[in-house]
Length: 617
Ligand code: ADP
Ligand code: MG
Image (cartoon, rainbow, N blue to C red; front, side):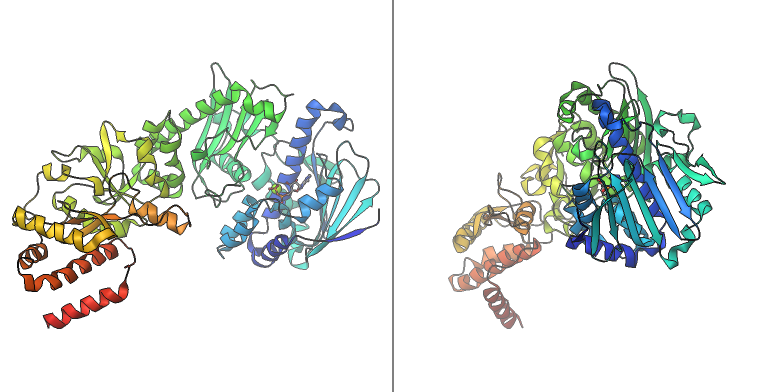
Protein backbone atom coordinates (compact mmCIF):
# COMPACT_ATOMS: atom_id res chain seq x y z
CA UNK A 1 0.00 0.00 0.00
CA UNK A 2 1.33 3.41 -0.94
CA UNK A 3 1.88 6.10 1.63
CA UNK A 4 -1.28 7.89 2.70
CA UNK A 5 -1.50 11.48 3.81
CA UNK A 6 -4.26 12.23 6.28
CA UNK A 7 -5.41 15.24 8.22
CA UNK A 8 -5.92 15.26 11.95
CA UNK A 9 -9.48 15.66 13.10
CA UNK A 10 -10.15 19.35 13.69
CA UNK A 11 -10.20 19.01 17.48
CA UNK A 12 -6.83 17.30 17.44
CA UNK A 13 -5.48 20.28 15.58
CA UNK A 14 -6.62 22.60 18.32
CA UNK A 15 -5.39 20.34 21.09
CA UNK A 16 -2.01 20.10 19.40
CA UNK A 17 -1.86 23.81 19.04
CA UNK A 18 -2.48 24.32 22.75
CA UNK A 19 -0.20 21.49 23.80
CA UNK A 20 2.64 22.86 21.74
CA UNK A 21 2.20 26.54 22.32
CA UNK A 22 0.93 26.91 25.85
CA UNK A 23 2.08 23.98 27.91
CA UNK A 24 5.81 24.28 27.65
CA UNK A 25 6.60 24.59 31.35
CA UNK A 26 5.61 21.10 32.40
CA UNK A 27 7.09 19.28 29.45
CA UNK A 28 8.34 16.44 31.67
CA UNK A 29 4.93 14.84 31.52
CA UNK A 30 5.42 13.78 27.90
CA UNK A 31 7.42 10.80 29.13
CA UNK A 32 4.90 9.88 31.76
CA UNK A 33 2.18 9.83 29.08
CA UNK A 34 4.19 7.72 26.62
CA UNK A 35 5.22 5.25 29.30
CA UNK A 36 1.67 5.08 30.56
CA UNK A 37 0.47 4.21 27.03
CA UNK A 38 3.19 1.58 26.68
CA UNK A 39 2.16 0.06 29.98
CA UNK A 40 -1.53 0.08 28.97
CA UNK A 41 -0.57 -1.68 25.74
CA UNK A 42 1.29 -4.40 27.67
CA UNK A 43 -1.62 -4.74 30.09
CA UNK A 44 -4.04 -5.24 27.22
CA UNK A 45 -2.00 -7.90 25.51
CA UNK A 46 -1.27 -9.73 28.73
CA UNK A 47 -4.98 -9.98 29.38
CA UNK A 48 -5.86 -11.04 25.81
CA UNK A 49 -2.99 -13.52 25.80
CA UNK A 50 -4.68 -15.49 28.53
CA UNK A 51 -7.63 -16.22 26.28
CA UNK A 52 -5.76 -16.30 22.98
CA UNK A 53 -2.26 -17.63 23.63
CA UNK A 54 -1.40 -17.34 19.91
CA UNK A 55 -1.22 -13.59 20.36
CA UNK A 56 1.79 -13.88 22.62
CA UNK A 57 3.53 -16.57 20.59
CA UNK A 58 6.31 -14.03 19.98
CA UNK A 59 6.93 -13.76 23.69
CA UNK A 60 5.03 -13.01 26.85
CA UNK A 61 7.71 -11.14 28.77
CA UNK A 62 6.41 -7.63 28.64
CA UNK A 63 8.76 -4.71 28.81
CA UNK A 64 9.35 -1.11 27.87
CA UNK A 65 12.63 0.07 26.37
CA UNK A 66 13.77 3.65 26.35
CA UNK A 67 16.73 4.69 24.21
CA UNK A 68 18.22 8.10 23.84
CA UNK A 69 20.67 9.41 21.25
CA UNK A 70 22.50 12.39 22.63
CA UNK A 71 23.97 13.45 19.29
CA UNK A 72 20.95 12.97 17.07
CA UNK A 73 18.65 14.35 19.79
CA UNK A 74 16.18 11.51 19.59
CA UNK A 75 14.32 9.44 22.17
CA UNK A 76 12.63 6.10 21.47
CA UNK A 77 9.98 4.61 23.73
CA UNK A 78 9.28 1.02 22.69
CA UNK A 79 6.92 -1.60 24.09
CA UNK A 80 6.02 -5.14 23.10
CA UNK A 81 2.36 -4.74 23.95
CA UNK A 82 -0.77 -4.98 21.85
CA UNK A 83 0.41 -2.69 19.02
CA UNK A 84 -1.69 -0.91 16.42
CA UNK A 85 -2.66 -1.75 12.86
CA UNK A 86 -3.53 0.64 10.03
CA UNK A 87 -6.99 1.55 11.30
CA UNK A 88 -5.92 1.70 14.96
CA UNK A 89 -3.25 4.22 14.06
CA UNK A 90 -5.72 6.43 12.24
CA UNK A 91 -8.35 6.19 14.95
CA UNK A 92 -6.11 6.39 17.99
CA UNK A 93 -3.51 8.87 16.87
CA UNK A 94 -5.54 10.99 14.48
CA UNK A 95 -8.79 11.60 16.30
CA UNK A 96 -9.94 12.11 19.82
CA UNK A 97 -12.45 9.39 20.46
CA UNK A 98 -13.94 10.97 23.50
CA UNK A 99 -16.43 13.71 22.87
CA UNK A 100 -14.81 15.37 25.86
CA UNK A 101 -12.20 16.94 23.64
CA UNK A 102 -14.21 20.08 23.10
CA UNK A 103 -14.77 20.35 26.80
CA UNK A 104 -11.05 19.96 27.17
CA UNK A 105 -10.51 23.04 25.12
CA UNK A 106 -13.15 24.96 27.00
CA UNK A 107 -11.81 23.87 30.34
CA UNK A 108 -8.33 25.17 29.85
CA UNK A 109 -7.77 27.80 32.45
CA UNK A 110 -4.70 29.51 31.08
CA UNK A 111 -2.88 28.32 34.17
CA UNK A 112 -0.13 26.20 32.66
CA UNK A 113 0.27 23.90 35.65
CA UNK A 114 -3.42 23.12 35.76
CA UNK A 115 -3.73 22.79 32.02
CA UNK A 116 -0.95 20.28 31.64
CA UNK A 117 -2.61 18.31 34.39
CA UNK A 118 -5.76 18.26 32.29
CA UNK A 119 -3.96 16.93 29.27
CA UNK A 120 -3.47 13.49 30.73
CA UNK A 121 -6.93 13.42 32.18
CA UNK A 122 -8.54 14.20 28.88
CA UNK A 123 -6.90 11.29 27.18
CA UNK A 124 -4.86 13.38 24.79
CA UNK A 125 -1.72 12.04 26.40
CA UNK A 126 -0.04 10.92 23.20
CA UNK A 127 -0.13 14.41 21.74
CA UNK A 128 2.01 15.67 24.58
CA UNK A 129 4.92 14.18 22.58
CA UNK A 130 4.72 17.30 20.45
CA UNK A 131 5.57 19.46 23.44
CA UNK A 132 9.17 18.37 23.06
CA UNK A 133 9.37 16.97 19.52
CA UNK A 134 8.91 18.63 16.17
CA UNK A 135 8.63 15.27 14.48
CA UNK A 136 7.28 11.95 15.75
CA UNK A 137 7.56 8.53 14.12
CA UNK A 138 5.46 5.63 15.32
CA UNK A 139 6.30 2.12 14.20
CA UNK A 140 3.71 -0.39 15.26
CA UNK A 141 2.53 -3.93 14.60
CA UNK A 142 -0.53 -5.37 16.19
CA UNK A 143 -0.19 -8.67 18.06
CA UNK A 144 -1.32 -11.52 15.84
CA UNK A 145 -0.88 -9.53 12.59
CA UNK A 146 1.92 -9.60 10.07
CA UNK A 147 2.05 -6.16 8.57
CA UNK A 148 3.76 -3.34 10.41
CA UNK A 149 3.13 0.38 9.91
CA UNK A 150 4.98 3.66 10.06
CA UNK A 151 3.05 6.73 11.17
CA UNK A 152 4.78 10.11 10.91
CA UNK A 153 3.82 13.63 11.77
CA UNK A 154 5.23 17.02 12.55
CA UNK A 155 2.12 17.78 14.60
CA UNK A 156 1.01 20.52 12.23
CA UNK A 157 -2.33 19.35 10.93
CA UNK A 158 -1.52 16.14 9.11
CA UNK A 159 0.19 12.77 9.38
CA UNK A 160 1.30 10.09 6.97
CA UNK A 161 0.89 6.35 7.15
CA UNK A 162 2.69 3.60 5.23
CA UNK A 163 3.54 -0.07 5.48
CA UNK A 164 6.92 -0.73 7.02
CA UNK A 165 9.39 -3.61 7.10
CA UNK A 166 10.80 -5.31 10.18
CA UNK A 167 8.48 -3.87 12.75
CA UNK A 168 8.47 -5.79 16.02
CA UNK A 169 5.23 -6.62 17.82
CA UNK A 170 4.13 -3.63 19.81
CA UNK A 171 4.83 0.04 19.37
CA UNK A 172 7.93 2.13 19.03
CA UNK A 173 7.64 5.89 19.35
CA UNK A 174 10.54 7.97 18.16
CA UNK A 175 10.76 11.63 19.09
CA UNK A 176 12.95 14.08 17.19
CA UNK A 177 13.50 16.66 19.89
CA UNK A 178 13.04 20.33 19.24
CA UNK A 179 16.10 22.51 19.64
CA UNK A 180 14.48 24.05 22.69
CA UNK A 181 13.95 20.61 24.26
CA UNK A 182 17.42 19.23 23.59
CA UNK A 183 17.92 18.85 27.36
CA UNK A 184 15.84 15.67 27.23
CA UNK A 185 18.43 13.91 25.10
CA UNK A 186 20.09 12.99 28.34
CA UNK A 187 19.82 9.56 29.95
CA UNK A 188 20.26 10.87 33.47
CA UNK A 189 17.48 13.36 33.05
CA UNK A 190 15.15 10.72 31.63
CA UNK A 191 15.90 8.26 34.43
CA UNK A 192 15.05 10.90 36.92
CA UNK A 193 11.70 11.64 35.25
CA UNK A 194 10.88 7.95 35.04
CA UNK A 195 11.63 7.43 38.69
CA UNK A 196 9.46 10.33 39.59
CA UNK A 197 6.43 9.55 37.48
CA UNK A 198 6.59 5.95 36.42
CA UNK A 199 8.36 4.03 39.12
CA UNK A 200 5.43 1.76 39.92
CA UNK A 201 4.65 0.87 36.30
CA UNK A 202 4.23 -2.86 36.67
CA UNK A 203 6.50 -3.72 33.71
CA UNK A 204 10.24 -3.24 33.69
CA UNK A 205 11.43 -0.08 31.98
CA UNK A 206 14.91 -0.66 30.53
CA UNK A 207 17.54 1.90 29.62
CA UNK A 208 20.97 1.38 28.25
CA UNK A 209 23.85 2.12 30.58
CA UNK A 210 27.38 1.66 29.23
CA UNK A 211 26.30 -1.08 26.89
CA UNK A 212 24.08 -3.05 29.27
CA UNK A 213 20.36 -2.80 29.80
CA UNK A 214 19.32 -1.71 33.24
CA UNK A 215 15.89 -1.59 34.86
CA UNK A 216 15.08 1.96 35.84
CA UNK A 217 11.83 1.51 37.73
CA UNK A 218 11.05 -0.78 40.61
CA UNK A 219 8.31 -2.44 38.51
CA UNK A 220 6.38 -3.60 41.52
CA UNK A 221 2.64 -3.42 41.65
CA UNK A 222 2.52 -1.02 44.56
CA UNK A 223 -0.73 -2.35 45.96
CA UNK A 224 0.73 -5.82 46.47
CA UNK A 225 3.39 -4.50 48.77
CA UNK A 226 3.26 -4.27 52.48
CA UNK A 227 1.79 -0.98 53.70
CA UNK A 228 4.63 -0.47 56.14
CA UNK A 229 7.16 -0.46 53.31
CA UNK A 230 5.43 2.19 51.25
CA UNK A 231 6.29 5.84 51.73
CA UNK A 232 3.76 8.66 51.41
CA UNK A 233 5.68 9.86 48.35
CA UNK A 234 5.28 6.49 46.68
CA UNK A 235 1.57 6.55 47.33
CA UNK A 236 1.34 10.07 46.02
CA UNK A 237 3.27 9.29 42.85
CA UNK A 238 1.16 6.23 42.23
CA UNK A 239 -1.95 8.33 42.64
CA UNK A 240 -0.63 10.90 40.21
CA UNK A 241 0.16 8.19 37.72
CA UNK A 242 -3.18 6.47 37.92
CA UNK A 243 -5.22 9.66 38.00
CA UNK A 244 -2.99 11.56 35.56
CA UNK A 245 -3.09 14.20 38.24
CA UNK A 246 -0.80 16.71 39.87
CA UNK A 247 -2.56 17.29 43.15
CA UNK A 248 -2.12 15.43 46.40
CA UNK A 249 -4.48 12.63 47.31
CA UNK A 250 -6.82 13.87 50.03
CA UNK A 251 -7.42 10.33 51.19
CA UNK A 252 -5.28 7.25 50.61
CA UNK A 253 -6.89 3.93 51.44
CA UNK A 254 -4.87 0.75 51.14
CA UNK A 255 -6.36 -2.40 52.56
CA UNK A 256 -6.92 -6.08 52.16
CA UNK A 257 -10.42 -7.42 52.43
CA UNK A 258 -10.64 -10.89 53.80
CA UNK A 259 -13.64 -13.09 54.16
CA UNK A 260 -16.08 -14.35 51.56
CA UNK A 261 -14.40 -12.31 48.82
CA UNK A 262 -10.74 -11.46 49.01
CA UNK A 263 -9.35 -8.41 47.36
CA UNK A 264 -6.81 -5.67 47.78
CA UNK A 265 -7.80 -2.08 47.28
CA UNK A 266 -5.57 0.91 46.81
CA UNK A 267 -7.87 3.86 46.47
CA UNK A 268 -7.51 7.61 46.46
CA UNK A 269 -9.82 10.54 46.87
CA UNK A 270 -8.38 13.56 45.07
CA UNK A 271 -7.94 16.93 46.65
CA UNK A 272 -9.13 18.90 43.63
CA UNK A 273 -12.33 18.60 41.68
CA UNK A 274 -11.69 16.43 38.63
CA UNK A 275 -12.54 18.42 35.53
CA UNK A 276 -14.98 15.79 34.29
CA UNK A 277 -16.88 15.21 37.52
CA UNK A 278 -20.12 16.13 35.82
CA UNK A 279 -19.39 14.83 32.34
CA UNK A 280 -21.16 11.72 31.24
CA UNK A 281 -18.30 10.39 29.16
CA UNK A 282 -15.73 10.70 31.91
CA UNK A 283 -13.13 7.97 32.19
CA UNK A 284 -13.82 5.38 34.83
CA UNK A 285 -11.18 5.69 37.45
CA UNK A 286 -10.81 2.39 39.24
CA UNK A 287 -8.81 -0.30 37.52
CA UNK A 288 -9.63 -3.92 38.08
CA UNK A 289 -6.87 -6.54 38.34
CA UNK A 290 -6.93 -10.23 38.99
CA UNK A 291 -3.76 -11.47 40.55
CA UNK A 292 -1.86 -8.46 39.22
CA UNK A 293 -3.19 -8.98 35.72
CA UNK A 294 -4.99 -5.93 34.47
CA UNK A 295 -8.52 -6.73 33.39
CA UNK A 296 -10.34 -3.52 32.73
CA UNK A 297 -10.58 0.09 33.65
CA UNK A 298 -14.04 0.48 32.44
CA UNK A 299 -16.32 -1.71 34.48
CA UNK A 300 -19.19 0.65 35.03
CA UNK A 301 -20.51 -0.58 38.34
CA UNK A 302 -17.32 -1.11 40.23
CA UNK A 303 -17.84 2.24 41.87
CA UNK A 304 -21.28 3.80 42.28
CA UNK A 305 -21.74 7.01 40.40
CA UNK A 306 -21.71 9.27 43.46
CA UNK A 307 -18.20 7.99 44.28
CA UNK A 308 -16.95 8.48 40.73
CA UNK A 309 -14.10 10.70 41.90
CA UNK A 310 -12.39 7.76 43.62
CA UNK A 311 -9.30 6.60 41.73
CA UNK A 312 -7.25 3.50 42.23
CA UNK A 313 -6.84 -0.21 41.85
CA UNK A 314 -8.76 -3.27 42.95
CA UNK A 315 -7.04 -6.62 42.73
CA UNK A 316 -9.01 -9.76 43.48
CA UNK A 317 -8.12 -13.41 43.27
CA UNK A 318 -11.73 -14.43 43.05
CA UNK A 319 -12.42 -13.58 39.42
CA UNK A 320 -11.93 -16.08 36.64
CA UNK A 321 -9.54 -14.70 34.06
CA UNK A 322 -10.88 -16.24 30.93
CA UNK A 323 -14.34 -14.76 30.80
CA UNK A 324 -15.64 -12.04 28.56
CA UNK A 325 -16.16 -8.52 29.80
CA UNK A 326 -19.92 -8.91 29.53
CA UNK A 327 -19.78 -11.95 31.80
CA UNK A 328 -17.49 -10.14 34.16
CA UNK A 329 -19.96 -7.40 34.70
CA UNK A 330 -22.59 -9.88 35.72
CA UNK A 331 -20.62 -11.92 38.22
CA UNK A 332 -21.81 -11.65 41.81
CA UNK A 333 -18.17 -11.27 42.83
CA UNK A 334 -18.01 -7.73 41.50
CA UNK A 335 -21.24 -6.82 43.20
CA UNK A 336 -19.79 -7.98 46.50
CA UNK A 337 -16.53 -6.17 45.93
CA UNK A 338 -18.47 -3.02 45.19
CA UNK A 339 -20.51 -3.26 48.37
CA UNK A 340 -17.39 -3.83 50.43
CA UNK A 341 -15.62 -0.92 48.77
CA UNK A 342 -18.44 1.47 49.42
CA UNK A 343 -18.78 0.47 53.04
CA UNK A 344 -15.07 0.85 53.55
CA UNK A 345 -14.88 4.24 51.89
CA UNK A 346 -17.81 5.57 53.87
CA UNK A 347 -16.32 4.48 57.17
CA UNK A 348 -13.03 6.06 56.16
CA UNK A 349 -14.86 9.31 55.39
CA UNK A 350 -16.51 9.15 58.78
CA UNK A 351 -13.12 9.03 60.42
CA UNK A 352 -11.87 11.93 58.29
CA UNK A 353 -14.98 13.99 59.07
CA UNK A 354 -13.82 14.38 62.65
CA UNK A 355 -11.41 17.03 61.46
CA UNK A 356 -13.87 19.65 60.24
CA UNK A 357 -11.33 21.84 58.50
CA UNK A 358 -9.80 18.98 56.55
CA UNK A 359 -13.20 17.56 55.77
CA UNK A 360 -14.37 20.89 54.38
CA UNK A 361 -11.66 20.58 51.72
CA UNK A 362 -13.16 17.31 50.58
CA UNK A 363 -16.64 18.70 50.75
CA UNK A 364 -15.89 21.80 48.74
CA UNK A 365 -14.23 19.82 45.94
CA UNK A 366 -16.41 16.76 45.76
CA UNK A 367 -19.46 17.18 47.99
CA UNK A 368 -21.72 18.05 45.08
CA UNK A 369 -21.20 14.60 43.56
CA UNK A 370 -21.03 12.72 46.85
CA UNK A 371 -24.38 14.09 47.97
CA UNK A 372 -26.04 12.39 45.00
CA UNK A 373 -25.61 9.23 47.07
CA UNK A 374 -28.45 10.27 49.37
CA UNK A 375 -30.66 9.93 46.34
CA UNK A 376 -28.92 7.04 44.66
CA UNK A 377 -27.72 4.64 47.32
CA UNK A 378 -30.79 3.33 49.12
CA UNK A 379 -28.71 1.11 51.34
CA UNK A 380 -26.34 3.75 52.68
CA UNK A 381 -28.38 6.91 52.44
CA UNK A 382 -28.52 7.48 56.18
CA UNK A 383 -24.72 7.39 56.41
CA UNK A 384 -24.27 9.55 53.34
CA UNK A 385 -26.66 12.13 54.75
CA UNK A 386 -24.72 12.08 57.98
CA UNK A 387 -21.52 12.68 56.03
CA UNK A 388 -23.03 15.53 54.02
CA UNK A 389 -22.45 19.17 54.82
CA UNK A 390 -24.61 22.18 54.11
CA UNK A 391 -24.61 25.93 54.12
CA UNK A 392 -26.87 27.31 56.77
CA UNK A 393 -28.20 30.54 58.19
CA UNK A 394 -26.29 29.77 61.40
CA UNK A 395 -23.06 31.13 59.94
CA UNK A 396 -20.55 30.83 57.15
CA UNK A 397 -19.29 27.36 58.08
CA UNK A 398 -20.62 24.14 56.63
CA UNK A 399 -22.85 22.27 59.03
CA UNK A 400 -23.90 18.64 59.41
CA UNK A 401 -27.43 17.40 59.99
CA UNK A 402 -26.28 16.23 63.39
CA UNK A 403 -25.30 19.78 64.33
CA UNK A 404 -28.53 21.15 62.92
CA UNK A 405 -30.68 18.76 64.91
CA UNK A 406 -28.71 19.60 68.04
CA UNK A 407 -29.63 23.27 67.60
CA UNK A 408 -33.33 22.83 66.91
CA UNK A 409 -35.65 25.10 68.89
CA UNK A 410 -38.33 24.12 71.32
CA UNK A 411 -41.47 23.38 69.36
CA UNK A 412 -39.54 22.81 66.13
CA UNK A 413 -40.03 19.37 64.65
CA UNK A 414 -38.75 19.80 61.09
CA UNK A 415 -35.40 20.42 59.46
CA UNK A 416 -36.05 23.56 57.45
CA UNK A 417 -34.34 24.21 54.15
CA UNK A 418 -34.54 26.58 51.26
CA UNK A 419 -33.32 25.85 47.75
CA UNK A 420 -31.69 28.28 45.36
CA UNK A 421 -28.62 28.80 43.29
CA UNK A 422 -26.58 30.94 45.60
CA UNK A 423 -26.23 30.80 49.37
CA UNK A 424 -25.71 34.56 49.65
CA UNK A 425 -28.89 35.34 47.73
CA UNK A 426 -30.81 32.85 49.86
CA UNK A 427 -29.58 34.41 53.09
CA UNK A 428 -31.33 37.63 52.10
CA UNK A 429 -34.62 36.09 51.13
CA UNK A 430 -37.66 37.64 52.83
CA UNK A 431 -38.89 34.11 53.47
CA UNK A 432 -36.22 33.66 56.09
CA UNK A 433 -37.18 36.70 58.15
CA UNK A 434 -39.55 34.85 60.45
CA UNK A 435 -37.03 32.06 60.98
CA UNK A 436 -34.33 34.53 61.79
CA UNK A 437 -36.56 36.37 64.24
CA UNK A 438 -37.23 33.09 66.06
CA UNK A 439 -33.61 32.00 65.94
CA UNK A 440 -34.55 28.98 63.81
CA UNK A 441 -31.73 27.76 61.59
CA UNK A 442 -32.42 27.08 57.92
CA UNK A 443 -30.24 24.95 55.65
CA UNK A 444 -29.43 26.55 52.32
CA UNK A 445 -29.54 23.99 49.53
CA UNK A 446 -27.65 25.23 46.52
CA UNK A 447 -26.94 22.14 44.43
CA UNK A 448 -29.28 20.83 41.75
CA UNK A 449 -29.47 17.44 43.45
CA UNK A 450 -30.84 19.16 46.58
CA UNK A 451 -34.13 19.55 44.76
CA UNK A 452 -34.48 15.81 44.55
CA UNK A 453 -33.01 13.91 47.44
CA UNK A 454 -35.42 15.11 50.15
CA UNK A 455 -38.12 13.12 48.34
CA UNK A 456 -36.06 9.95 48.54
CA UNK A 457 -34.86 10.62 52.07
CA UNK A 458 -37.67 12.58 53.67
CA UNK A 459 -36.45 12.58 57.28
CA UNK A 460 -33.24 12.43 59.25
CA UNK A 461 -33.51 10.85 62.70
CA UNK A 462 -37.30 11.20 62.50
CA UNK A 463 -37.07 14.90 61.76
CA UNK A 464 -38.72 15.58 58.40
CA UNK A 465 -37.10 17.89 55.89
CA UNK A 466 -39.39 20.80 55.15
CA UNK A 467 -38.99 23.57 52.60
CA UNK A 468 -39.47 26.96 54.24
CA UNK A 469 -42.28 27.68 51.82
CA UNK A 470 -44.15 24.73 53.36
CA UNK A 471 -43.48 25.75 56.95
CA UNK A 472 -47.20 26.37 57.46
CA UNK A 473 -48.10 26.91 61.09
CA UNK A 474 -45.10 25.07 62.51
CA UNK A 475 -43.33 28.38 62.73
CA UNK A 476 -46.11 29.83 64.80
CA UNK A 477 -45.56 27.13 67.40
CA UNK A 478 -41.96 28.04 67.89
CA UNK A 479 -41.52 30.55 70.64
CA UNK A 480 -40.60 33.84 69.12
CA UNK A 481 -37.93 36.14 70.35
CA UNK A 482 -39.01 39.67 71.18
CA UNK A 483 -39.92 42.03 68.41
CA UNK A 484 -42.07 40.19 65.91
CA UNK A 485 -45.40 40.49 67.68
CA UNK A 486 -46.87 43.56 66.02
CA UNK A 487 -50.57 44.29 66.04
CA UNK A 488 -52.46 42.21 63.58
CA UNK A 489 -55.24 43.63 61.51
CA UNK A 490 -58.64 42.46 62.63
CA UNK A 491 -59.56 39.15 61.11
CA UNK A 492 -62.48 40.60 59.19
CA UNK A 493 -60.45 43.40 57.64
CA UNK A 494 -57.67 41.02 56.74
CA UNK A 495 -60.04 38.57 55.10
CA UNK A 496 -61.52 41.34 53.05
CA UNK A 497 -58.07 42.45 51.90
CA UNK A 498 -57.03 38.90 50.99
CA UNK A 499 -60.24 38.36 49.05
CA UNK A 500 -59.72 41.66 47.27
CA UNK A 501 -56.16 40.74 46.37
CA UNK A 502 -57.24 37.40 44.95
CA UNK A 503 -59.82 39.13 42.84
CA UNK A 504 -57.31 41.68 41.56
CA UNK A 505 -54.64 39.09 40.69
CA UNK A 506 -56.97 36.70 38.90
CA UNK A 507 -55.02 33.78 37.43
CA UNK A 508 -51.64 35.32 38.20
CA UNK A 509 -51.56 33.60 41.59
CA UNK A 510 -53.00 30.36 42.86
CA UNK A 511 -53.85 31.64 46.29
CA UNK A 512 -53.29 34.47 48.76
CA UNK A 513 -52.78 33.58 52.40
CA UNK A 514 -51.15 34.87 55.57
CA UNK A 515 -47.81 33.71 56.89
CA UNK A 516 -45.60 33.93 59.97
CA UNK A 517 -42.46 33.76 57.91
CA UNK A 518 -42.21 37.47 57.23
CA UNK A 519 -41.03 40.24 59.50
CA UNK A 520 -39.67 43.17 57.47
CA UNK A 521 -41.32 42.32 54.17
CA UNK A 522 -45.04 42.68 53.50
CA UNK A 523 -45.33 39.73 51.08
CA UNK A 524 -43.48 36.84 49.51
CA UNK A 525 -44.11 34.31 46.77
CA UNK A 526 -43.97 30.55 47.33
CA UNK A 527 -44.72 27.35 45.45
CA UNK A 528 -48.02 25.71 46.28
CA UNK A 529 -47.92 22.36 48.07
CA UNK A 530 -47.18 19.67 45.50
CA UNK A 531 -45.84 22.12 42.90
CA UNK A 532 -42.19 22.19 41.98
CA UNK A 533 -40.13 24.81 43.75
CA UNK A 534 -39.33 28.17 42.21
CA UNK A 535 -35.68 27.18 42.08
CA UNK A 536 -36.34 23.93 40.27
CA UNK A 537 -38.57 25.72 37.81
CA UNK A 538 -35.77 28.19 37.16
CA UNK A 539 -33.29 25.37 36.67
CA UNK A 540 -35.53 23.61 34.21
CA UNK A 541 -36.13 26.77 32.26
CA UNK A 542 -32.37 27.28 32.15
CA UNK A 543 -31.97 23.83 30.63
CA UNK A 544 -34.85 24.49 28.30
CA UNK A 545 -37.00 21.71 29.59
CA UNK A 546 -40.29 22.12 27.76
CA UNK A 547 -42.49 20.87 30.58
CA UNK A 548 -42.36 24.02 32.62
CA UNK A 549 -44.58 26.95 31.83
CA UNK A 550 -44.43 28.73 35.15
CA UNK A 551 -47.16 27.33 37.34
CA UNK A 552 -49.05 29.93 39.35
CA UNK A 553 -47.65 30.69 42.80
CA UNK A 554 -49.06 31.45 46.20
CA UNK A 555 -48.65 34.97 47.55
CA UNK A 556 -48.07 35.02 51.29
CA UNK A 557 -48.94 38.11 53.28
CA UNK A 558 -47.45 39.40 56.52
CA UNK A 559 -50.48 40.41 58.60
CA UNK A 560 -48.35 42.44 61.03
CA UNK A 561 -46.76 44.63 58.41
CA UNK A 562 -47.70 48.27 58.59
CA UNK A 563 -48.37 48.47 54.89
CA UNK A 564 -50.76 45.54 55.03
CA UNK A 565 -52.59 47.15 57.94
CA UNK A 566 -52.87 50.41 56.03
CA UNK A 567 -54.12 48.71 52.91
CA UNK A 568 -56.79 46.85 54.89
CA UNK A 569 -57.82 50.16 56.38
CA UNK A 570 -57.85 51.96 53.04
CA UNK A 571 -60.02 49.31 51.50
CA UNK A 572 -62.92 50.50 53.66
CA UNK A 573 -62.89 53.78 51.76
CA UNK A 574 -64.47 53.38 48.33
CA UNK A 575 -62.49 56.35 46.93
CA UNK A 576 -59.18 54.73 47.77
CA UNK A 577 -59.93 51.43 46.06
CA UNK A 578 -58.09 52.19 42.78
CA UNK A 579 -54.98 53.06 44.75
CA UNK A 580 -55.21 49.84 46.75
CA UNK A 581 -55.53 47.93 43.48
CA UNK A 582 -52.34 49.51 42.18
CA UNK A 583 -50.56 48.91 45.47
CA UNK A 584 -51.32 45.20 45.60
CA UNK A 585 -50.18 44.82 41.99
CA UNK A 586 -46.89 46.45 42.92
CA UNK A 587 -46.59 44.11 45.92
CA UNK A 588 -46.96 41.11 43.66
CA UNK A 589 -44.25 42.42 41.35
CA UNK A 590 -41.97 43.06 44.32
CA UNK A 591 -42.43 39.52 45.56
CA UNK A 592 -41.46 38.40 42.09
CA UNK A 593 -38.30 40.50 42.17
CA UNK A 594 -37.36 39.23 45.63
CA UNK A 595 -37.39 35.72 44.17
CA UNK A 596 -35.04 36.79 41.41
CA UNK A 597 -37.81 36.47 38.85
CA UNK A 598 -38.50 38.94 36.07
CA UNK A 599 -41.59 41.14 36.33
CA UNK A 600 -44.35 40.10 33.93
CA UNK A 601 -45.27 43.61 32.80
CA UNK A 602 -42.43 46.04 33.54
CA UNK A 603 -44.11 49.03 31.84
CA UNK A 604 -47.22 48.79 34.03
CA UNK A 605 -45.02 48.32 37.10
CA UNK A 606 -43.09 51.48 36.35
CA UNK A 607 -46.24 53.46 35.70
CA UNK A 608 -47.65 52.48 39.09
CA UNK A 609 -44.45 53.26 40.94
CA UNK A 610 -44.29 56.65 39.21
CA UNK A 611 -47.83 57.42 40.32
CA UNK A 612 -47.04 56.50 43.90
CA UNK A 613 -44.00 58.73 43.89
CA UNK A 614 -45.99 61.61 42.45
CA UNK A 615 -48.61 61.22 45.18
CA UNK A 616 -46.02 60.83 47.89
CA UNK A 617 -43.86 63.83 47.14
P1 ADP B 1 -5.38 7.48 26.39
O1 ADP B 1 -4.15 6.73 26.78
O2 ADP B 1 -5.94 8.28 27.53
O3 ADP B 1 -6.41 6.64 25.72
P2 ADP B 1 -3.59 8.75 24.58
O4 ADP B 1 -3.63 10.00 23.80
O5 ADP B 1 -2.46 8.64 25.54
O6 ADP B 1 -4.96 8.60 25.32
O7 ADP B 1 -3.56 7.55 23.59
C1 ADP B 1 -4.56 7.43 22.61
C2 ADP B 1 -4.73 5.99 22.17
O8 ADP B 1 -3.66 5.60 21.33
C3 ADP B 1 -4.73 4.98 23.28
O9 ADP B 1 -6.01 4.85 23.84
C4 ADP B 1 -4.30 3.71 22.57
O10 ADP B 1 -5.42 3.10 21.94
C5 ADP B 1 -3.39 4.22 21.49
N1 ADP B 1 -1.98 4.09 21.89
C6 ADP B 1 -1.15 5.06 22.30
N2 ADP B 1 0.06 4.57 22.58
C7 ADP B 1 0.01 3.26 22.35
C8 ADP B 1 0.94 2.18 22.47
N3 ADP B 1 2.19 2.36 22.89
N4 ADP B 1 0.52 0.92 22.09
C9 ADP B 1 -0.74 0.73 21.67
N5 ADP B 1 -1.66 1.69 21.56
C10 ADP B 1 -1.30 2.94 21.89
MG1 MG C 1 -2.51 7.67 27.52
